[in-house]
Image (cartoon, rainbow, N blue to C red; front, top):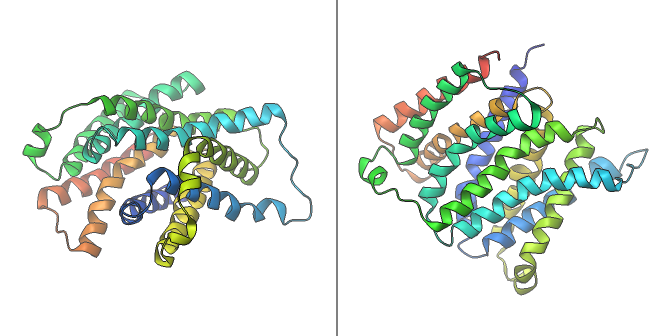
Length: 293
């Protein structure tokens, strides 16, 4: 069976995630980041709910053990965002972008621990080369930026968030019990929203939705539907057929997509070396996906 359609879905997932960064930057100039994350998850849960509740047979409510599974998976995903926003109080977005490149490697280690699947030496080597290329893209080919990179206390918090993100897909594969991807996605989204509610309570009650401009609500709806609802569903579908390392290797393309989007919509022309690194990254990610373990 060809897995090409699932690789195509992950490529779409990566492009949607890349588009959410400039959109998120626009929104967070006016609203709190944690409130925005809570709203996008809450709206995504509501938008996904008709797939379960408006059908001939109503869904079976999860048992206590099932809720444990959904909270483990949803917690891994939502805790990443909580760690990121806490870390950004003490570090820079450049640092977090650089540290996020560790996620595929952390996922490889956790895939071995959780699923017992080892990453081959060839795939590990390709991932290492891709890591160097993506760092070149993140630092925009600037040695000065690269030399100025220093770790801070906030970076330790963010590495903890990277660990939970790295665990998300291995946990999804391990804890899926055949209840159907739609069911698994909805209950996991709901669990993520409930966890975020606990952390975002002060912001939920201090910010009035009526104070937000209609145009911003349009961007928030985009983040809720595409960047949360659709991407959540894509990862749950592809996790049935692709390994966690294959899926998360596509995150190496995210900085390149952001550079290209900035070029197209903001006129920020990248250097030739950055463009070469982006094209090379595409080749390496394709190669990683083609390897057979």
